[in-house]
Each structure stands twice: as C-alpha cells, then as structure tokens.
Length: 465
Image (cartoon, rainbow, N blue to C red; front, side):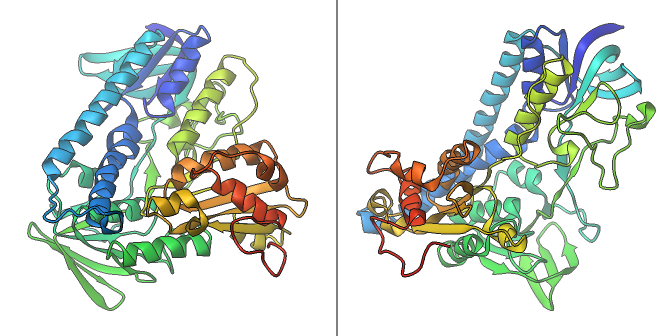
C-alpha cells in the first residue's frame, strides 16, 4: 500500500492548486482524477464557454459596428471551426495543469477514488485497483448539472456540458433556467445567430443581482440580442424527440430544435463511500465544513462546489490553498468571505461584497452612488456606453459593496474587491489617480459621486443614497 501525506480527490480548480500547495509545503502528495484534468471549469464550464463567448462578442460587434464605420455584410459563423478553437484551448490548458502538477512533484493517478476506512482509500484505475494510505485527504469532487424529473432523455435535450459538446448551433434554442449559466449560454447562442427563448420559473432572471443591475442585463438581452425572456413561468410538460422539443409552461407552448436545461447544479459525492468513515452528506448532498474546510471527520477536508459554499472556481482555488496549508499545520487565516461574482452575459455583470438589496432588507444604513458608462470617455469612444457601476458604502464612506454592469465589468470588479478588502473609503478611491481614458477610472468617478462632488456628471439635488 502506497503511503502519502496528502491525497487530493479531484483535479478541478480547487483540487489541483491544493495538491500543488501541499507539495510545495514538502508533503508527499498524490492527486486522483477520474475524467479530465482541470475539472468542470476548464473542460465544460468557465474556459470553453468564454472561448465561445469571445467569438460571439466578435460576431455581434462586427454586425453592429456601423456607428464605428465597420460594415460586415454577409458575415458568417463557422461554428465547427469555433468548436475546434474551443477544444484546442481546453486541451492546451489541461496539459498545462498536468505539467504544473508534475513540476511540483505531485503524483497523478487517473481513476475513481473511494474510502475504505479512515486514512485508507481504493482507486479504481484503468490498470486495476490501487490502495492508498493517507494522513490527510482533500475531497474536491465538484458538482454536476441537476436535471428536473419532468425532463425526458432525448437527443434534443441537453444540459450545459452537452450543449458545449455539440458541433452545430441549433437554429432555435429554448433555455430552461434564468441563472447565470442559462443567461450566459442564451446570450452566446443569440450572438452567434440562434433564435433564443429563455423560460424561468421565478419572477426575474439573475435574482442574486440587485434589481437595477438585472434590469440592465434583461433589457440588453431582449433589445440587443432579441432573446425572448419569459419569467414567472413554471414548466409543466416537455415532449422531446430527435427532431425537436416542445415545452408547455405557464399556459403557453414553446417549440425549439434544442432544449438547454440550466436549472442548477448538485454536488458529486456518489462513489466516494464517505459513509465508511462516518462522513455523511447533508440533505442537499453537500459535505459541510468549517472555516478552514475541515469536515466532521478529522483529517478529511472538502473544498469547492462539494462543500456547499460559493460554486465558483476562484472560491474553490482559495479554499484549496487554505485546506492544504491547514492540513500540514500552517495556520493561515480562514476562508475568505469576500468573494467576487462574475457573469459573462451581454453586457457583462460583476458584484462583490454587500448588495444594495441585502443591505436594505437588513435595515442597514448605507450610501449608494452610481456612475454611468455614458459619461465615461473610454466607453463612449468604444461604442459601449450602456451600463453603470455602483458603490455601496457605510454612512462614514467606507466601501462595503460594489456592482458593475457593462463592458469589461468582469475585469473591473477586481479593483472594487481590493478596495473593499482593504477597507478603503470612497474619498481614498476618489483621490487615487486613475489613468485616462480607461474603463478603470469609472470607480474613481463613482467615488466622487458618493463623496458628493462629481466631476463628470451633474451634481445630485440630494445626497448620495
């Protein structure tokens, strides 16, 4: 039986950084991956969708570039070539993950791991079974798409992974689910030429966002991408076959060539045999942990989507580093609680910290200031003048939250996250010189608004907030 200081199960954005950190700390480390190095994020999530969204944005900009003197009559999209680019990107980055693990001295095993007893694991590998002994185990098995029971199995029905595996774009796409996955893929398909309808059970899409932010996104989806967005509509029946699909919902019938189901994700714990060591998932299937990702079983950690925290790749990476340090006796601070969120819709959306809605619901006294892209020189010059950013601050001006909706919002949010984590005030951000003309200076402008002395928008007749 091979003995290790740390065994990591799952090589996604939480698992492989955890293995690298453990090895860097001098631990004999092995990582086990049953399918694809880099996990869902790299292979069927973050990376392939962004490769395709980049193409969609390029196509959309070319079709709508007349105001900038760009005319592209007869523009076509070679979807098969786009898929080859997506696959090449995934393969390149996947090989990079394996190379980084090797460079750090992490042993790699392809197979499926399960607990035999405390500190003992079995790996079902292509070459046969292996048994491992581990002082510490980090579970990083991630999540998978959840399919509602009323959805039939048919070629015309896919979840996000199945959608990305296709090599042809459906002429008509029906999306069930208005969360970030559904909205991103709906926008991607629309920008590339599909006729898209999105159906959501709840009263609006992207309910984690403040109303003003999600209204901006929905307006753009409907006005610029011609996506039909139907909310407050419960799916009642789905009939699907090889030729297409029909969805009955809210007294209406929706027809399409393909149905994309994006109604949520569930943790992957099956096959772990966690019950053998007394590790019981909760009622939703998550392995609950403390602030350093320790489960109720000594020496066993759970990170990323499987532990019930934010289902975000960057959160998993942070947790993985913290878990590895803790497992090897390095007392670092607990998990970060300030976790930015980014959504690659059209336009992009990002948020961090306290939302305006949550603060109001809690009766918290806050000040709010917005600055529009329409008053930002760089945005106007680039023909992307829709959207805004906003700061949320305590009464003394200390920044506690931020949101951005518009061009490059997903990049812009990093400055806001750093400012909030450093407990900066609006005055401090406003006095920080930002280069002009850039998108980044929009945070300085919004800070001026919050401080009550805006330069590039008219002063408000009432104080901010």
